[in-house]
Image 1 (spheres, helix red, strand yellow):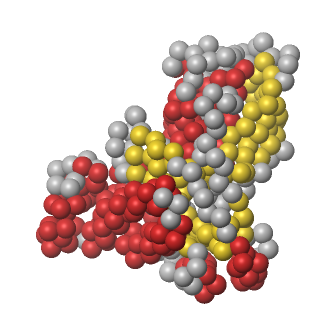
Image 2 (cartoon, rainbow, N blue to C red):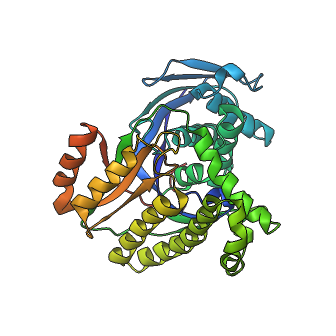
Image 3 (cartoon, rainbow, N blue to C red):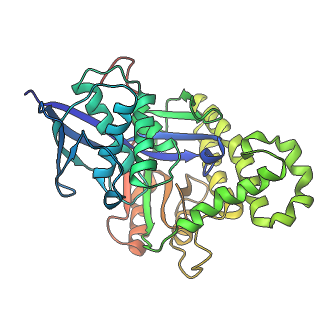
Length: 373
């Protein structure tokens, strides 16, 4: 059987920190790190996966029931993506795939979403399916939520599947509105810094953010903050404080970051790099002060992200931008570093967090219509 090559990129989150789960808007982009594979049909009902990053495994397509012992494993993702395709009426069968990836695991670059989208691309390409990028993204989200066991949003899979830089509006989660935009950040390098590799269970911290936001929306009789007019919210802050001040502050972040995403998109369209970077930095300050996802309140003596942000401020001052990247509490920050300060930035950060903590990357452009798989 002929072998074919497939790939799917990782992604970065640029704007809209913790807004997607409230049906808000985000600014995200695919990057030049990717998961790749060679694959061939094997005319059986089994999928055989080998990789240099994890143990080989196989999936029986005749039994795609959820397996608890596969939670949080690549096998769960393949089984889940396959289940989505079959449940949606696609005719698939087995294949052999050899997978590799240069996306660092645990740096918030969506290695899992890239893997999911890759498997969706393999099904689509090998079996000549009429699957859209949106469908492949849905398959990935389904696999991660239902089989892998992670209650993720939809941004990661969307960015990896559609590619390029884009603003995504999740007002209607079943039909997100995508607005591609070209990035022209000449003179700046993008860096993700691994600043805190805490192995503590942060599930409760992550879950508290949508829980807090929903307390505010419930006060207005709504499901999500997206259903509330900010002009109703702000005059009601005095009454809302009985819910606790943190839910109020997190709602403030949501409403203001929603505005910033649109402004960031407009700045990129106008090629106004200075304004774009100002908004990135402003979003980061909002995450720190209002969203409060820079460190875990259960361990106030561990604040790696805060240290990284302080170092970034020292090096970059008003030239460049920096903010928490992704979920927060631990993990990574995102920085836009002037090329003239690239070495200084890397050296100052690495002196604290160790060699290899800085991952410099590039945003990839959206493929031409009809190109690729």
